[in-house]
Image (cartoon, rainbow, N blue to C red; front, side, top):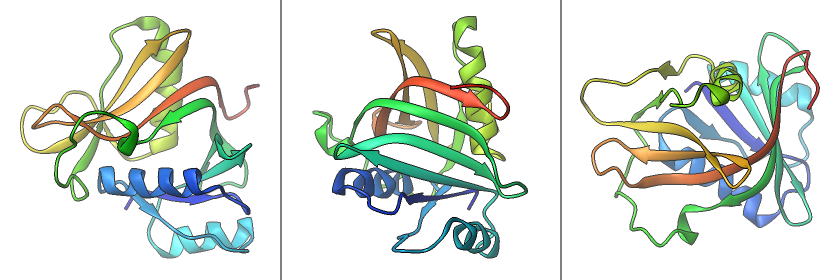
Length: 180
């Protein structure tokens, strides 16, 4: 496990579903039901489980709004993503593959050089995940593309080329030391 995904203190059902869909998309994600645990407890729990990153998904007005990504070596977020909206897998009209839960996550570099800064932020947020195009085998691809003035992140099954996870529409992002 590379990334432990959890929610803010009072998550919406949609935010909980987003955590579960990320966990089901590939082996890089694992989720934890937060309850009333503090941020320092979450960091210690993630270290004990062998994670290298902690993602806290914050809710606002009934939906996921901000993803804060923490490197477990520090207390400040290494990257943050302000979400415009999320399209859950159950809302897509495409039948997804049966199971991609045990597949490796591969980051696919964007075709446009304008998306390179957000690609670097995502590499920082995912930590040990492989970047590039894998030659063969079964894995989950994380793609980045522009979409109506936003940046869309989506997960694709390498075998069927169908979505196997939620689509995240990012309004703004921040790397460590930069403004959102």
